[in-house]
Every structure is written in structure tokens, then in C-alpha cells.
Length: 130
Image 1: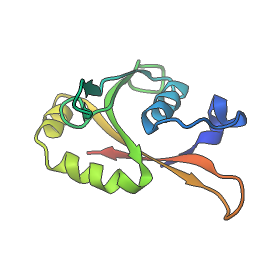
Image 2 (image 1 turned 180 degrees about the horizontal axis):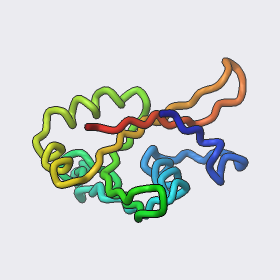
Image 3 (image 1 turned 90 degrees about the horizontal axis):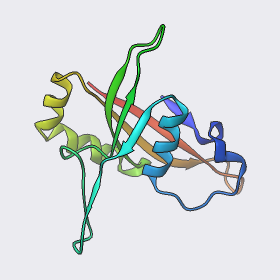
């Protein structure tokens, strides 16, 4: 599934340099999720630690008529690194435990798309891990 950043509020403003995490937080909130960044920066080490080894964002969406409630951990990255993150998740045991407990895992890979020499826009490739 592909979501275009043009559907987000800031699409009409000049694009500031923002992280994939910031883009994903905005996208998830626009889709009705309540979310929080759970990735931690370890001081003085320049290391980022993901929740359970794979989650950057914890997102929940309450149940509504016609739509079940959901809780998910989101791994967000650039489009070029999406396969590496998928491979990392496949090699861990905690994602299987998260899924067995009823949680969902969503991958967001952000990339710029548009015609050569033309205006580019951010686009999210979204995948669900089963």
C-alpha cells in the first residue's frame, strides 16, 4: 500500500528536512491513530534503541463502527532500507511474541517520487508483517 505525503497537512508548505519517524507520526495521526515515539537515544553513544528491537512508534487506534481497534509497533525508515528492516525483524524472536499477543507490526519506507527534473513528493511504502 502506498500513501502520498500530499494528503498530509504540510504538503502545501515548503518541505523542511524531517526524519522518517516524524513523517510516519504525522501520517499515523492523520489516519486516526494515537501514537508516541518509543525509540530511545542512548546518551553519549550515538546509538538508537528500538522498542523490543524493532519498533520506533507505538500506535493505537480505538475501535469504531466498521473498524476494529488496533495496537501496532511501527518500524520507519527510508525506502532504500526497507528490505534491511524487514530482514532484521525476521531474525528476532520478539516480533513473533508481539504478534502472538495480538499486536500488529507495520513497516513504513519513505522515498521521494516524481518526474526527473520536476517537483518531488514524499511517499510511504507501507507493509504489514504477519
